[in-house]
Length: 196
Image (tube, rainbow, N blue to C red):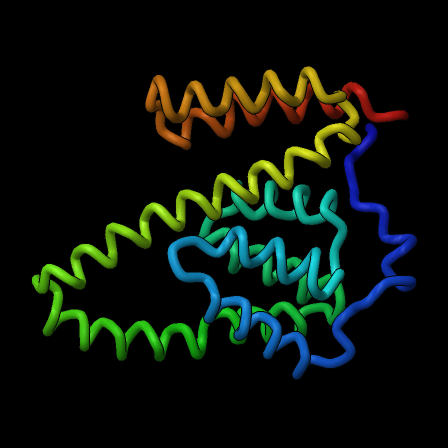
């Protein structure tokens, strides 16, 4: 039975984290930038800046991270850490992703409790919501470019994107229905296109 997997033959030829310390600080820095949605930051940091992943690898890992239980970016950090350093790398990446941001959130929550009803704070948070939506839309457009190299081809991938958007945004079906139905259909169609 054919299975989809990331081609790791070129991983040794491109940049990678040289130590657990570098992995820790990379994910700490990544997490500290993730205000309002970390997807744009993760893609820019891991693919564009550090080049630890290709865009295609990022899409595949992000898709897997989304269907696993737990926060997507934490799941992705586990995959990246494990790929480079095994179980130790997975643990270090998760600690980097969570430790300092958790301390920061506790401090910000204490301040927010005091100023939550202030009109300036309310307005600032509404403005950040628009920025977060823009970041997600921007990353979606950048990732769409790699769909041209997908085994299904651009047209079927585009139809899957439209079906996903329609079921989530127009029909407002819960993610628990969309993932197995639309995602399952996409997986089966892709599996059938893979060479034996």
